[in-house]
Image 1 (cartoon, one colour):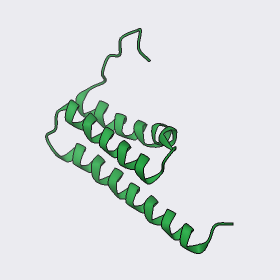
Image 2 (spheres, one colour):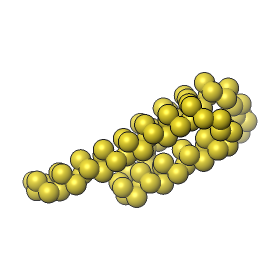
Image 3 (cartoon, one colour):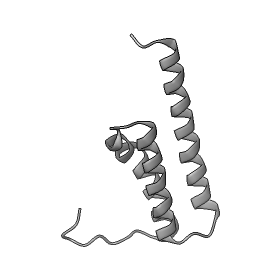
Length: 86
């Protein structure tokens, strides 16, 4: 059973990630970034999330990437993906 300190530390990391994601989404919506710059922000947030939660890259892809991509697609238009790429 996790100790109280471990739970508190995980909650702190969750709050930090939530703040970073929310801040990054607001930055993308309110500033004049290029699509490539916005994608760079997403990748930076992902790297930070993986440092906070090692081994949880799939969770980022499942939960946060769709939120970021929805904003990017709304702001810059949907990117056409070549047929040979997923």
